[in-house]
Image 1: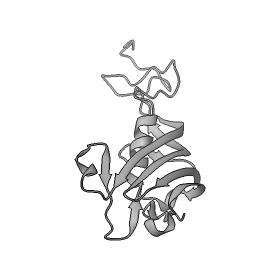
Image 2: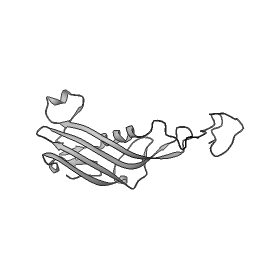
Image 3: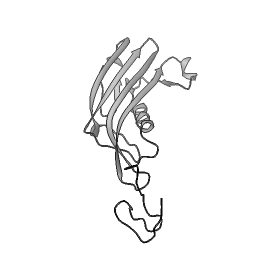
Length: 159
């Protein structure tokens, strides 16, 4: 199995029938993540892919381990989160299976299986809904906007 980092896709011809499991080291800067509010921190990530190929479908199971940065929900400071995102997706080129909302169509136009969207989805779902820089974050003053973790303001607002 071969991985094209620039598109996070796997050439279908490189996936043999049966189960294939392989781990890839991904240069994070090469992948067009384009996830609003989330940036990568790791230079490299580890992507483990297990793809089961049958006559009409491909079942993708995998994990991505990498560090990403998001904003603190209270003070907007960067928060580094270690992500271990689980990736699951089923693809098919059998028209009868495509009525199932859990099945993605396989396009043979470019001969690749693009896994960027399910990996992005797994990253987003694995990050905390309310990330905090620390559990005692005081947040921003709603009146003057000062980061109350770094300095006091005259408004005395309690979070």
